[in-house]
Amino acid sequence: MELDDAIDMFFQYLRVEKGVSNETIKNYAYDLKKFFSVLPKQTTDDLLPTDISDFIRIQSKENMSTPTILRRLSVTKNFYHFLEREKILTEPLPKIETPKGIKRLPTCLSIEDVEALLEAPDLKKAEGLRDRAMLETMYSTGLRVSELLSLKMKQINFQHGIIQIIGKGNKQRNVPIGEFALDFINKYVETARRKNVGKYTDYLFLNRYGKPISRQFFFKQVKKYAEQVGIVEDISPHTLRHCFATHMLENGAQLRAVQEMLGHSNIATTQIYTNLSSKRILDAYDLYSKRK
Image (spheres, rainbow, N blue to C red):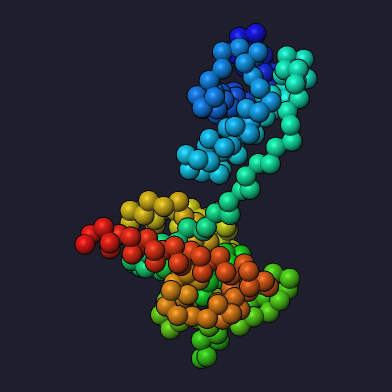
């Protein structure tokens, strides 16, 4: 059977029996095309049980990224297994050790980009002052987004510069907050929040209706400000938590101290920022070397 005919049969099976969308089929077609560009075949008689392992070996030698290899591998293995079930491919596929997935490092902005993001809100508007206070608080403390949005007035000790947080697993931790962030919280509380219809509620950061800010809304605001100042990376509110941890370590903070501030139960979770920090330093060194 011609290979193209076999692929059409496979896609028909996915559409009719599996209910796979046309968009997904389009993506599968692209990955199969890439697979067979590496291992050209004309008919199903040309297919071999060793094709999958050969593909991994060739792509790995070409330094193709692991996520890309895994994605193309998954589609192609499903195609080969389909041909097995249809008795078109008579030799079964051997058990194959696929490359392990890479744990992606979180996005981290430069200090300059963080500063630009923090300064993006319009302080002449109540919404802008509130958003500036929220962004400053996240970057100053490394709070989780959920912890920031559920923050209550009574949790902030303005005199000692401490925020009392009840985090994951109902664990309590005290997180220091910088004077700069506290100053913006004070400005927001004394002006915009005082005029808000929900000024007597416990929650610190409120929308125009006096309710706590939602994750979706804050996410959109961060995206808006990032686009406004020309940040091209795909970021979210959580990016500021990553930046807090990475910049702390780059400036000499102890790993254990950063772990406590982030509220990580396992220090291995915090260590990913050590890798990220080192990568950023190496990238900067490479850039410097190229300019010499």
